[in-house]
Length: 207
Ligand code: TZP
Ligand code: MG
Image 1 (spheres, protein in one colour):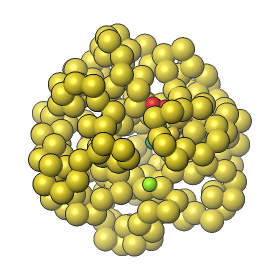
Image 2: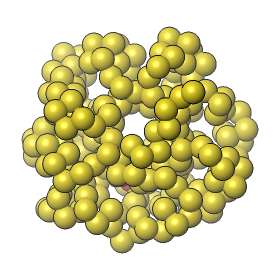
Image 3: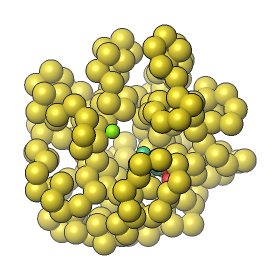
């Protein structure tokens, strides 16, 4: 049986250098110390690093996760998945197909973003360890984010898949995190609610 990843989803921090106004390692270290339960390295979009700069930052962040024993998940990058010996890979609907990833990585955590019922119907959900559901609320962090789908999407997914580990994403913050959990998610994944706040420790605790 696959391990149940739902405990890792409770406070799932996502970040790339493009989300940071100061040192990404410092931000991750503070977040790890404050109790995040998983980390996704998502170096993507305007201003993001590529090539060896991305690799070097990835090594630093990977090391922090090792020290705090937090699962390190890479966003859609097979090369770095190998180079950084990641714990998991997260993909979107237009990324590497899940079937291929599962075949290549039988023991890694695989996460998939799902935004609506037709994506759910077309996805090999039985092959993934968790799904990211959203954007739940509107967000300006992801340039090409789809329209906000609301808490109903979590409720719908939960009703359809009672045991599937589900994490909400998109516009989640300390004010609305509880509503995402109440709707049936196992956790919340956030970028700005941790990367862009003054008091990271306080924010992590209140998520
Ligand atoms: N996928 C859907 S919304 C989103 C991603 C990566 C961005 C989430 O960022 P924030 O700042 O937590 O709204
Ligand atoms: Mg993607």
